[in-house]
Length: 116
Image 1 (cartoon, helix red, strand yellow):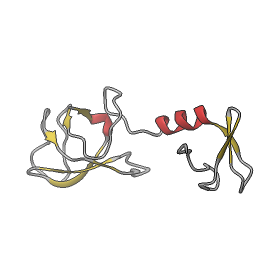
Image 2 (image 1 turned 90 degrees about the vertical axis):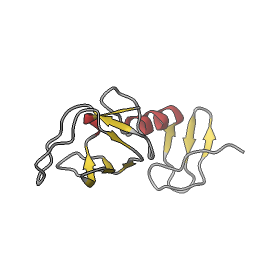
Image 3 (image 1 turned 180 degrees about the horizontal axis):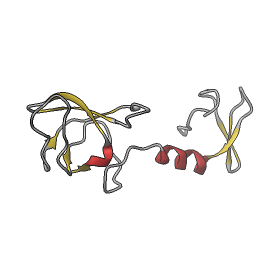
Image 4 (image 1 turned 135 degrees about the vertical axis):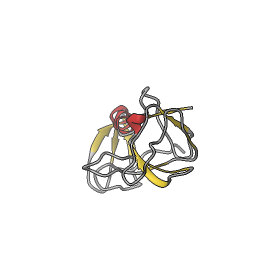
């Protein structure tokens, strides 16, 4: 049995294929399987080079980052292990939650890191 995605409208798990479309029997929503894959890929968090990031990845910082409340900045090339992806602050755009040696727990923007 195939593992089909849940309905994007009502999150029903009872979707089925009808030709090239996926159909939800509960809300009658129809969508393309290709569109579902593209939407999922578009929502992916990407680093400064365009690589898709996942939970548990190790990244490096690509520029010196000033941290409010600290005298020193996070230096270029600092390695950050075991990142966690979050939905992000709407205003600030932070989408990585991590712990950096010497600084503690903080949030970073994915545009300032690259995947190792």
